[in-house]
Image (cartoon, rainbow, N blue to C red):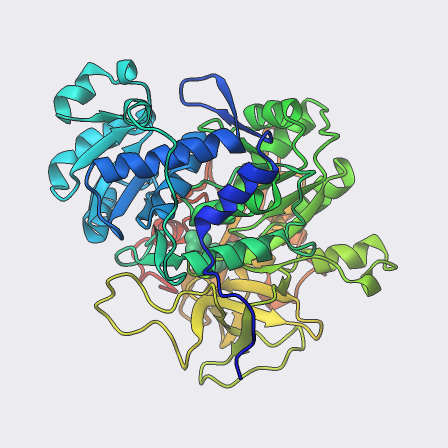
Length: 545
Ligand code: AMP
C-alpha cells in the first residue's frame, strides 16, 4: 500500500526559491577578481539566476547540455549553480589549477557547449579555445567593457556575462522534472590515469544539502555567516552553496584571495561563524594569526577535510584560538560528505586529551551513508578501531558510475570502493590511515603514512611533512619523511627521528628524513605523493603505485 503523501521531486531550484522567499535580504558577500568586495542578497541572486536560465535559452542550449565554469568562489558562480542546474542543464565545474591540456581534455570529454570563466583564467581560455570545437559559447564573467582586447581577438564572439544577463528579465518559471536528472558534473583530480566525471543529480544534491546542515555535521543555520574556502570547482564547495540556501545562512565568498591575511580580514569584516577548507589553507591562516597575535571572536567552528587534519592543527585551533574543529571525510564520488567528527554526549565528560584523540579521526558516517571496511579478499573487518582495510561506502549521494565510463563499473557488489584504508571503532568513528596507494608496506605490515605525518607535524620545528614509501631490498618498503622546516628552525634529522620514540612502535619509525624548501601540492591543495616518490626513489622502481 502506498503512503498518501504528496510527491514533489527534489529540485535544486527550490533551494534558492526558499532562500529568496524567507531570507531575501540575507547577504551574499564576495571578494571579486576585480579586487573589490561585492554585496548582493538571496533575493537578487534568485533574479539573476533566472536571467542566467533565460540567457541559456536564448543561446539555444538544450536540456542536459553541459555548461562549464572556470571560476573562483563568488556570487556569479553561485548564480550559475542555480541558473544552469535549475533550468535542467548540467553545471560542469572545472578546476583551473589543472594543466590547460588536461582542462581541454575534460571539456571535450564532457562535451561542454558553453564555458563561463573569470577573467583571471582568460589565458587558459585563449590556450584551449581552439582545441574545444564543441564549445559554442565562451562567456567572460564580467561587464562588456572589461573584456580585454587580446581575449576578444583570440576568442571571437566571446560574450560578456553581464551583457547577457542585462538583455534578460527575471520572468522565469523553473521547470519541474525527474529528481534523478543530472545537475552538476565534477571530474576527479586524476593523479593516476584520465580524470573521471562524477555526475550529481537534483535528488542527491538536495539530500546532501539536508545532511550537510545537520547539527552533527556542519550545524548550519540562518544565524551563521559561512565562508567556503573550499573551491566551488572542487565537489561543489562541499555542498555549502546549497546547504547555505537551504538554511538561509549568510554566504561569504573569498574569490581568488586565499592567503591567511586576506581570509582573516574577510572573516573579521563579515563576522564569519563557520569556515571550511583543506588543511594546507588553514595552515596559512593559523600562521598569520599566530605571527600577528590575532583572534577571530566570531569564528566558532571550522570544517577541515580533503586531507587528514593533523592533531597539532586541531589543537592549535581549539586551544590557542578557541575555534572548534570539525574533521570531515569525503571525496568527489561522495558529493563529498561521508563522515564528520562530532562528539557524542558520553564524550563530553572526558578530559581534553581523550576528546582530541577522537577529533583526530575523520568521524562518524552521516545518516544516508553506509560504510564497511574489508580485507583484500572482501571479508568484512571488525569495528575495533584497529583492523585496517579498504573502506567501502554506499548511499543516495554516492556515485553509481562515472560519466561516459568505457571501463567496468567502479562498484563492488553495490558498494563504492573509496581507495582509502581505514579503521572503524565500536562507536562508528572512521579513521583514515592512508590512501591505498600511499600506505607503506614494510615486511608484510602496513604503516600509516598519515600517522607518521601527524607526529612530525606536532614538532614545533616542522611546517609541513609528508611520509612516503621508499623501496627497500629487505623490507620491501620503508617510510621516508619529507619535511619543510619552520622558518628559523634548527631541527635536524636525528632530533626529529628521536621525537618518534615512544609514540609508535620502533619498526614504524621512519628510516630517514629529507629536508626540502617546499612540498608539491596538487590542484585541490593535497600533497602530491607520487611526485615525491618519483623524486626520492631515484633510479629505483616507483613504490606503492
Ligand atoms: P577528492 O575526490 O579529490 O576530494 O579526494 C578524496 C580523497 O581525499 C579521499 O578518498 C581521501 O583519500 C582524502 N581525504 C578526504 N578527506 C580526508 C580526511 N579528513 N582525512 C584523510 N584523507 C582525506
